[in-house]
Length: 356
Image (cartoon, rainbow, N blue to C red; front, side, top):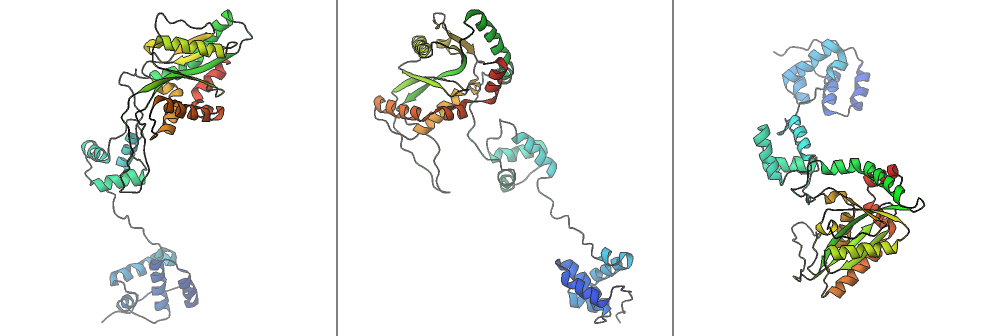
């Protein structure tokens, strides 16, 4: 025969009734309901109470035991279930974050899966890896910036760090040779090939729709020589048919004639036409060479990308049409746009330190 529950409920029935209405959690509601039903003597046994509430007898006994030991507050303490353990533990996720923060990255989500298994001994399905990396960590496949295998280790960081000192040394020499009132300016120079072969880029389509872009295979081209001043956004471009010392020398001559009153420090790469022994420089031009195989330190490279982006998927039937297209893009590049693209912090800070 079921035994009558022996328990002293200190709360009044009216208090429990009000408290019952206030409960927003089902588990807390059930606990208060149990006390209320016992208080008003609607039930007297654990078995009867378990049937009404829809819980097991042992669960009801555990609730009442909690009430006896700590009162209503103790009984309403609802323990949180630890839940399902993640297939990829937190410590492994932290290791993965470190790897994903490196510029080299992974070539695919499958490679991440292999890495987890080989290095951390965590075997999970591809879908689990994709959900973690793509959805939770927001790491997505991107087109990488090409880096030459010949680039010296740490060359970029060293160039950025030493640029202020190099500029100060050049300015000191300038003071000894040139008139003190002449303005000193810092430019970044490079050349880029522009051709009739269609410039391609990404296209946006709906999921499952493969984009198509019409391409013409005509390899006639011209060379665009350029100079940009990151501090002001001024620029100077000129077209040549070749990339060689003769054209580069003529380009510098035309540039110097355009700005004859200023002293120009020009940052450029180590191309053969830039370092030829027979290269003749204008009197007001000083060359400052960046590290070999490090185009990343020259902001005009980014400007070339913007120009070519504006020309992607355009068709030009001959070089004259290409010239008009390039000229149109160049005319749209005002000083504000050029400064926003080429005014890199490490260059501007170095110019301030050097007093340019």
